[in-house]
Amino acid sequence: MDFRYSDLIDPSTYETEGLCDGIPLRMHREPSKENIGAIRAQSDWTRLVGPVGYYRGGLGAPYSFLRVSVPECIPERLEIISYANEFAFLYDDVMENIDPDKGIESERRILDVFGDDVLSLDAGPAASTNGAKSKVCGQKRIQSQILAEMLALDRERALTSMQSWATFVRLSASRRRCLPFASLEEYLPYRIIDAGEMIWFGTVTFGMALTIPEDEMDLCKRLARPAFAAFGLTNDLFSWDKERDEAKQRGDPHLVNAIWVLMGELSISESEAKVVCRDKIKAYVAEYLIIVQETRMKSELSQDLRTYIEALQYSISRNVV
Image 1 (cartoon, rainbow, N blue to C red):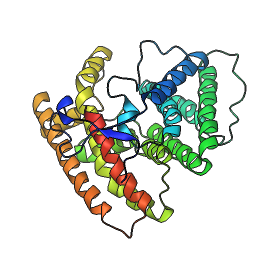
Image 2: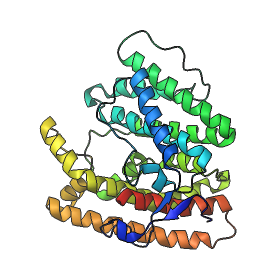
Image 3: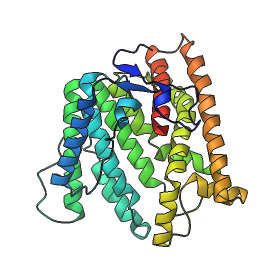
Image 4: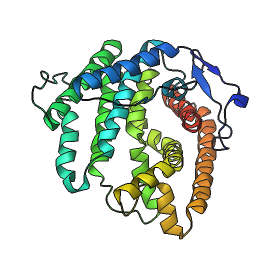
């Protein structure tokens, strides 16, 4: 994998808590493009959907989300994937706030944003009515803006990205979160989807102009699974305290988090579950590093597949710092 747009970051300047040993941190050289995309998405969301409140999304110093997650993004594509990523962050808040008692109705509204017209650019005029329909219309207009800008840069990969995104939302909305998981083994397939396996595939392949051959797609997913398992478990570990406190305030009987699953499965304390979760993350990272090294040497695989698998490791290190 060639490095044309990013620089290696001195490991003495950041802390990983040992959760991504062996994976360096790289950062894109053009911060302004990501900032512009994220700020523009927040502005459009406020105008078309509703206020974002005190919200930073992917913005952050010194390691903003996309500059280190996709450090080799083609510069001309960084602004639009930042815009799309910020929309995804904002949209994820909608997904997280689905009322389980109104699950089917909420899911239909969510899927309406990614319906049959997902690739048509026909989001319709701005809605004059209030409520859920107005918000869905605003979300569709933002989605259409994303697709229009992506199509202008790379039609083929834009369509692939949006199809991947639509698949992600359909899978997420169809998997109910109201029932507890009995084991980490049962939980992980759900968490891998929820961690954005498909949406991140679309983001990375578009940003880096990669095309995975159809006959390599199943292999691509299998090879990438340990990376997405590490993503999901790392997010669960770092968000646990906040999620636990919020669940207590709501009176929720259980949480959708690996720490909670491990506590129940193994009959262990919260602190013990955190240790187990950390060990699982380290194991998945070590497994993925072996996959990266082995895949890099397999000349029978397409160059774009090998590049994609190698590129995902930088998303792991970004998830930790």
